[in-house]
Each structure stands twice: as structure tokens, then as C-alpha cells.
Length: 521
Image 1: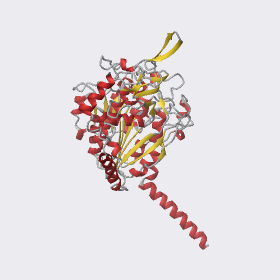
Image 2 (image 1 turned 180 degrees about the vertical axis):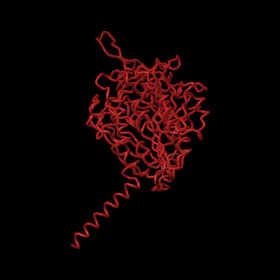
Image 3 (image 1 turned 45 degrees about the vertical axis):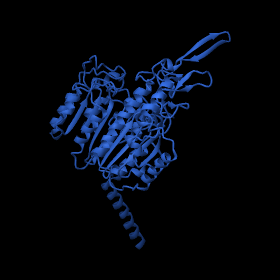
Image 4 (image 1 turned 120 degrees about the vertical axis):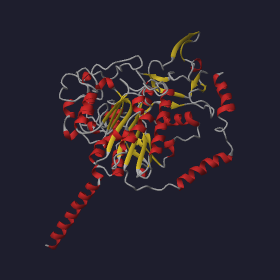
């Protein structure tokens, strides 16, 4: 009955435009795409600015579901209109399926490393503090390259600022969970926790923008509240340090103007002209899902709110900037098999991409959207075109029980909705009919086939979309760590900087001169 009702409402109210099937409609879609393709011109400018969006866990099926959620099967997301794209292989140095720490290290530092480690190479095994201290095992991140080139740099996340993806930009750690000292075991005293690396070490302490959650890992005895509880998956600092105070003191002592904001009101009233460094920490743990956050003065900002403020601060630097933005709650929702929450978070990140695209110029700003890994989300069966992507697909041809368009191959206990039925034919296993539940709710756990503690990551390729200078460098199937090299080349950073090119040319010239001299002799 729910499926029939959905189809009726869709046909009458919301889906008339999307359900065109005449020949002219298909011709118009294809000709529009052809005209776009014919107008694409390669941009060989140097990327003054780079903005890298990471949809954590946003695999191709998540992107497809987001597209349908936003506007139907024929809709196109903002970044799907970017002129260049490719695919990235996401495997880790030691695993076929990665986590966010190792995959972010690949993206940001140009090397594959071991699962659950960050900012170190594959010689460092998980938990090996001593090995992680070796200078030769510590690659240089894109933020480091940007800062060394005189650019500004920043990170934004909907996660704790010490969480795996953002931390891979500034920290070197043999364990992603060492976000503060309370999670570090005996024998690791010589290694700094991730929060201290952010505030005390380069490049973390020189990031002009840091925004996300994670106050409990930065400040000892942080205060929990009903609407902002502690995140016990994370780390609660206990060593007496107040790293937010350290942050302010460091910037002031160096002659800079720091701004620290903790809610919507403070971010909205930010004095950009009198802000050299911006630290925004809006929650003890991760930021709330976008659909449930408090949008009032004391609430948490959206990912778009943070992106807007960041660009305003960073663009004051005439030499440009590098900004990483993570939509981390996509991954958090997928882990709990909350498909609707994950897709809604993906849509929220798309809005932030749209904002960034409108605030920047494609002539000098390389704008990239990608993911660190996939999840096990599937789009199933043969649902009618134009139906709600969170609804029932159809009844199973095997047992007649309905199933949803979206499901997971792995999931937590809530998703494994099977039970044993005894009848005259013996025992059989049945799956709960999802039409008995409201699958439109944000907290509905979509069914999974294999029961785990939670939904696992997937090992499939992820898409990468690009607009701006040298966006055409993303053009086929790439290794994930290639992104680091492509960005470095586009922005002339590190080995591809003007200074490096001049030195290489002089070195080559000296070789030629010596060769000529030898030849004459």
C-alpha cells in the first residue's frame, strides 16, 4: 500500500517533469551534454587557490542516491557538471579496503600507507610510536607545501578536528585513535597526541583556518551538555592542558590576530578583517547531522557556513590558499546504516560545493570533489522511475517479502532483520518486511545481508570531479595518491614550484656545460 501511495503522489504532484519519456526529451538531454563537451577548454593557468572537498564514505552509489534525492534520476549535482573527472583506486598499502586515515594520507601526502595510520609511510606499523618519529617516514602534506609557498591553508570538517581525515593533513601518528593523551598507552610517551600536533607543531599551528568539532580532545575537563554530550568513541583530554588557550597565546605572541568561535552567533559576527587565524570548535565530539542541528545563535554551523567564513579569511592572502573540506557525517551515517542521513549529509556537502564554486573563479581556483572510500550501499531491484529512493523497490521474487531500493551488504545488529520461522515444513529464515516500518525516517536502519558490529567500508573506486586550472589532469583511472601530485603540479607546489623548476633547469644546464667542456677536451 505504501508503494502504491508513493507512486500515485509521485505521478500527480512531484514527478511529472522527471517522468518524460518522449524522444525529444532524450534528444535534448544528450544534445545539451554534447554542447557542454564541445565548449570545454583546457585551463593551463597556475592554480592560485585549491579547494579539496572530501565526502567521507561518498562512493558512487551515494552520489547517485543523492542525485535522485535532490532532483530525480535525470538531475545533475553541481559537481557532476564540472568538466573533468576520473576514478581513484582506494586500496591501502596493506589492505584491499582502506580506512579514512590511510586514504586521507594518500590524498594529502602522496603515498599509500597502512590502515589506521596517518601522515607516515608504510614502514610504520600500527601502534609503532618509535617508527613514526623517524623523519624519513614522515611525508609532507599539501597544507605544508602551501604554507611553505607563502599561501594560506585551512581545514574544515563536520567531525572532530582531530579525527582521521583532517588529522592526516597535519599529524604523523601510528594510530588514528591517539587523538589526545588519554588514549595513548604506556610506552608511547615520546609521541605527541594528535591534538597537540595540531596546536603545537607545523603545519597544524600555522593553519589559518581550523573548524569542526572535538573540544573534548583539546581542553581538559570540557563541559558536556544535554545537546552536546561527550563522544566516548573519541578521546577526553585529562592532562591539564587547554590547547585552545595555547592556540590563542601562540598567535598573539607571534603578532597575529586570532579569533576563536564556538557557535553560530560568533561565527556569523566574525570580524574577517581583524582575523589572521580562525579556530572554530563547535562541539565536544562530531558536529550534529545537518537535519538535526540547532540553527539558532547557540547552535552549530552548517558545512556551508564554515566554508563561507573560511574562504573570506583565506582569500586575504594575495598568494592564494589551500583549503580541505570534509563532509564526515556521510561516513558516520553509513556506518550505522542510516542511508537517509548519509544521503542528506551528501546533499549538504553539495550545497557547500555550490557555494564555493560561486565564491571563486574557475580561472584561478582548482575546485575538486572526491571521496576517501566507498561504503557497502547498494541501489537494488527495479523500482519505478520517479519513486522515492528511500522507499520499497518491490517484492522479492523468491519469498514475496518487500525490500527497499537501498540496502547494505554489511551492517550492525539493527540491520540484520532476520528471524526463524517454524511451520509444518520445518524451520526457515525470514527477513522482516520493511514496509512494516517507516523507511522515510532519518533513523531507519536499512537492511543488510551480513551482520557485523557496524557497516564496513567498501573497497570500490571513487569518483573525482574537478574544475579550474589543470582540472584536466583528472581524466581516467588513477591511483588515489596521484591527487597529491596533480594538485602540487597545478598549484606549482613542492617539487613543481617555480624555484624547484629553476633549480632543475640550472642543474640540467650545468650538466650540459660540463658535457660540452669534456667533449672539447
